[in-house]
Length: 276
Image (cartoon, rainbow, N blue to C red; front, side, top):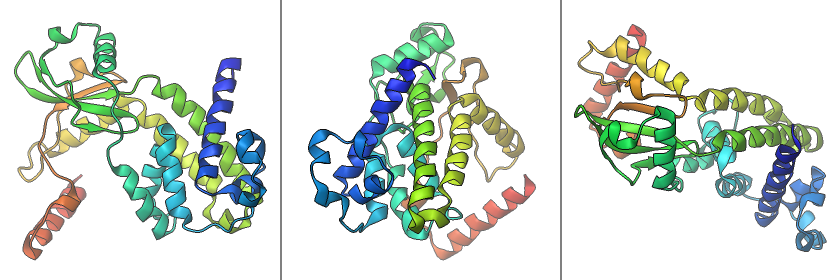
C-alpha cells in the first residue's frame, strides 16, 4: 500500500470509529483498542466506554448508512444473508436497500463519455439528467439511443473502486479485532463475513460480470412469454457503464396480489428456475 493510500485508510478508519462513538458504541471501541482513532473531545468522555450496548442492529445500520461507500454495500449484502446473521440484523440492514444520495450529472456525463470514448450526443438522442435510482456503487439514468430504443444506463460512481478497496481492508481489520476481543459476537464468524463481502464486491465493481450474467439469463428466457429479461447493448457497455433496455417494474413488496395470483407467480418462478 502506498503512503497516500495508507493515509486515506487511516482517515477512513478514523471516520468510522467516530461514527461508532456517535452511536454510543464506545464499549466496542474500547474492546477493539480503537480509542486512539477518536477525536480528542471524544477520548475525554470515559463514561461512554462503559455503557451497555442496546439496539445493536439499529446502531450498526446507522453507522453503515452514515459511512457510505463499502459500508452501505456490506449492510445490503448482509441483509440477504440469513445464513450468516440472525434475523433481527437482516431485517434492520434491509433498510439500507433504499436509495442513497446520487452524484452530479456532470460526473455522469464525464464518466460515460470517457468510457464510451464518444460525446454523449453521439450515442444517445435523449439522456435524463436525474437518475431513476441511486445506490452505493452506481446509479441508473433513463435514456434513448440514436436508434430509438429506450434504455437504462447504469453508471459507476467516480473513484468508487479506491474507496471500496480501502473499506475492504478496514472491514477485514475490524472483523479480526472483533472476533478476537468480543466473545459475544464470535459465533457470527466476522472474518468469514469479510471474505464473502470482498468476493461479492470485487465482482460487482466490474459491470462486465453483471452484463455477462444478464446475457446468459436473457438467452435462456427469450422464448418464455412469462419472463421478461433486460437485453445488454454490448457496444455501449464497459466495466463502468452498463446499458440495457428499459423495463418498467415494481419492487416485490410494492405489489398487491390475490392468493391465486401469488400462487401463479410462485409456480412461474419455480418452473423458470428449474428450466434454467
